[in-house]
Length: 194
Ligand code: ITT
Image (tube, rainbow, N blue to C red):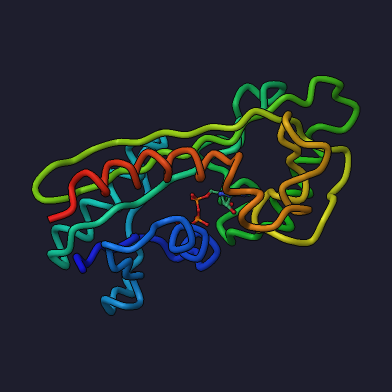
């Protein structure tokens, strides 16, 4: 099996992706390759950040790699929190605080349309490829459900009566931004098995 690093510190994402990626690739985490570095994510767009993370691992550790960056874009907030979704309420990457701030900034707002967007950058066998996925939905008035992570309790996809946090991982993957982008990644990987 070919080793492929997923450059993330988010164990939920790693679990989600390992569940979708079948056999053929051995998905390694940053921990698995002893990488404890603070990988820079300083671009002002999702693609730039995904590329930065994947290139960092290739350059410093020599592994083929993919990385994703995800943002929640809220129409009434001109696309915020967007690329800054992880640090919306401050540098602490505190999901509860991020959700509270989002709900506060949307108090009294009728247009609650939003979308999650994921960009994946893959470096494999000398090629760099980008995959994208998104899901339309709305920000709920209050959190709903206890599963998932990040903004899941306040995001209800248009095609669902309930939030992401009320779904199993498989149900979420079937309609989610990361599920869509990962689906494209998987198809590419399957056709590029060595
Ligand atoms: P990395 O180590 O991969 O960077 P991260 O948790 O910082 O992990 P992102 O930068 O991609 O992940 O995510 C930006 C923010 O959006 C962060 O607050 C996440 O919790 C949130 N997020 C990402 N994917 C999500 C999903 O599927 N559902 C809910 N929130 C999500």
